[in-house]
Image (cartoon, rainbow, N blue to C red; front, side, top):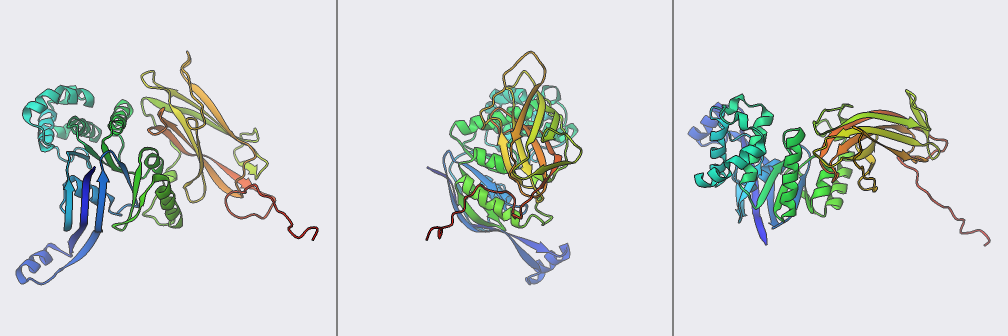
Length: 403
């Protein structure tokens, strides 16, 4: 069953050089503006229970599309039909009144979402408990940190129990325990067979969670289909424009260790052929790369999983591995920390400089607790004259031999 339908929808904004131009246009009926097309004419059907991801560079029109579906803006042309209740987490906390208390904003936000006051009365304690802000509910929201406001907004949105959930650039909010709690709620939403639309710059999350992906570029749908196919095409597109400053790869962040509260990376060691030199040099097809990670996880969560990516000069991942996909499971013991290593024998990367990136993820391999990006650099050298990124096994045959 179709729950969202867009028919010939487009969105255009008028841009004026100054406020005077707007006034002059009204008075003289002469055009003093330029039109900026954010979303080209688009028709789209989204079915019940679909998890749809939106990918595209900044400014592509993803957020505009989500706002049109959510009803926070109206199309310039066309029609948007939504047959079920929607909860949209577009700008968490943006609808709160800063002078009103957290309690008052709960009732305000829930009323805007369609709940009556008696319904909010029944859900109020659940909302407060989920947000973890019981001691702050009688304080004005203007005294909240951005994280606190986001937590309260998320709790209110989830209490509405919508049929469609819209997420803009986030699969969880806040940090530590609340980030995991919000992530679990979203996964439960998916398992319940409800519809989810979200945009993200994490291709890993897009492919792991979605069953359909839209790639939007300059207001147009470039591809619409199966996640692996669309993500691959989009990644190839990004690789051709990776030198553009407006498009940043997630792998370009500096190497940092962030305290997340529930789980964290403690130490990483990278060895080349058993050596941990300051300058790691490996030879194509002959050398072994070994990465050892030590981490800790709170007893209140399932033990995390590990992800490793090797990235190249353009910043994007060249290859990856995860303990979850490779069948390595961690079991609790009486020690406070856990360790694992991964070995890449006879590494087949061709000459160049590469970086190691480490991720500490949830037991499902989606939610990121901690990360260490570009934590180590290594250089590949080679004896042959092959070009490219990787050498592949092959076999030559002389078809004229014996003729």
